[in-house]
Structures are given as structure tokens and as C-alpha cells.
Amino acid sequence: MAMRAVALVCGLAGASSSVALVTAWDEILEGLKTKWPNNGRDRTKQSTNGGDNPQQPSRQPVPFVIQRIGRGNKREIEEITKMCIDVFFNEQSAATETGEEKKRVPPWKSLQLAYLGNMQTGDLLSRNAFRKDQLVDLIIARRVYPADSPRVNGNAVGDLSGICNPEYLAAPNGNGYVTGEIIGYCEVSEKNFGLGGKFQTQQSSPPQPKRRRGKSGEKPRPYLSNLSVVEYARQSGVGSKLLDECEDAVRDWKAGHTEIVLQVEEDNPTAIQFYKRRGYEFVFADPTCRRYDTSGIILRETRITKYALIKRLDEGSRGKEEEEASDDGSSLIQKLRSSFFVQR
Image (cartoon, rainbow, N blue to C red; front, side, top):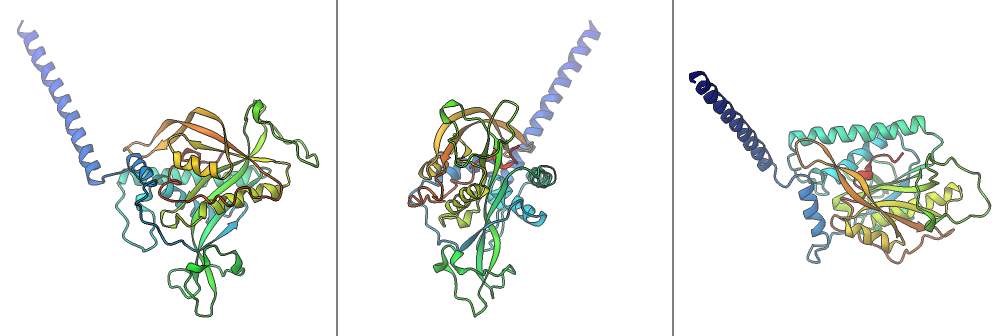
């Protein structure tokens, strides 16, 4: 009887210790999260709702140029990756126009962002090395500065007519203009993507050689992904110009494509309306998609429903240019978030 009593007392003591350890661990985690508030997806959702707020102050448009860089070199890919990681997962620490001090990033999130960045850089470089027959174009937007600006040391802008929002440029001291940092990005690549019988590809003229289909019979189609714009450059028309250039790139492939497709998350109504104004139409919803969640200490993949959208490409036409969609708020923060990674 005495032995049973001792065992019972020890068991209770062990259970109490376990409960105490769990409670202490929870308190530590809560303290860490309090030190870095508004982190991860909660912050992103708040800013998404704020994007539709009519009281949000307007920004002065940013001068920029659009560049089509093909598959890009290593330096360009690393710069693209850094910008996209900040926009999609860590906008709180993204560089600002005024150079104001960045907010602190929790140490666990720094590891998550480094992992995501290395993964994306590796995917892009491996695609360049091993999938050379895939049709790909990377499109970037670079900010434009007067050549005498102390902040940049970029390439000279030869064709001044290609500068968007030139009226907001400071007058140079006789040295012209140069390009600065990347402020926007998107890519279009040929991907096996099925749409169903309702949206069969229209025949182009003249007939084009047959291209390889996927295992399930999907037809190779131009797939647009990773559209992103830094926070301070929104409301400048960057997103619309990137889409224009992607559509022109598909026409220049001369591969017989007559449409372009993309996916957008269902909980991003601002992005859905942006694409709708640009001439894209709904095809189907896919509830099996996933995206990365960096709100916690452990990087997770969560389930999300995505809408597949399609736009018919008229030869020699950009579509609805007159319906210029605004790149305000966070309409581009969550856009194609899990699609950030190279589409295979």
C-alpha cells in the first residue's frame, strides 16, 4: 500500500512538472511574439483590408522603366528573389523610398526567409541550366533616377520615351537618367495547364508545331506568375505595365498561343478585380493548392483555394488598356503568393 502511495505521488509530481514546462514554454513563445507584433499572415490580412480604404493617402507616382530580361543572369535572379521575398512574406522590412529604419525581424523569421530565398534562387537557376527548351521571360520594373543622384549607380536610360511617369522625375544636371533598384516583377513561362473542354485553345494561323503535353494531357500554355510590386511604388501603374509586357512577350514567342492563364487566391478580392479589369475571366477553382505561412516560429504550408483565370490574346492588341487598374494598398501583397515558386 505504501509503495502504491509513493508511485501515485511521483506520478502526480511528474504530471505537474510536465504541465509547468508546457506553461513556461507557452509563456516564452507569447513573449517572443509580443516583442515582434503584427508578424506574418495576420499583418498581411490587415493591410489587405486597408488597401480598399478610400481614406488611404495617395502616393506620388514613381518613375520607372520596364525591362524584359529573358531568363535573367545570377545577379538579376538574386535581386528579384530578394524583392519578391520582401513583398510576399516580409513587407514590414522592405526597403522604403525615404530610407527610413527597417523594423526588426524575429530571428526565426529570418531563417524562414533565408530558406525561401535560397529555394527560389535555386529553382530559377536550375531551370536555366536544365530546362533550356522551356519558353520563359522574366519582366522587371526598375526605378529611374537622375544620373547625378547619390543613391544609385545604375545603367544609363537611352530611350527616354520608355520612362513611365516621367513628369515626376527631377531634372538632371545634363547627365541624363539611370536605372535603380527593381520595384516590380512578374514572369511568364510555358506550363502544362489544363482548362477543361469549355476553354479549348483557339487555333492560330499559320499552324504551329505540336509541343509536348503533360502526363494527364494538359496543353502547354503561357502561365503568368509572381506579379509583385514594392510597397512605395504602388499606385504608379507598375502592375499594369508588367502585365502588358508579359502579354507582348507571349506574342513575340510566335508559338501559336492565343491565351494566357494565371492563378489567384480566393481571399484576395482586390487582385481578382484587378485581373478582371484587365480582361481575365474565371475558369475554375482549385481547393487543393497550398501556400507558405511565416506567421509562426515553424514554417508551414497551409491549404488555400485558387481561382484559375484566362485571357484571350488578340494579335497585336494589348486588350483593355483604358481600364488601368490601380496598384494600391496590398492588392499585390498576397497575389499568387504560393505561386511565387517556379511553376513546373
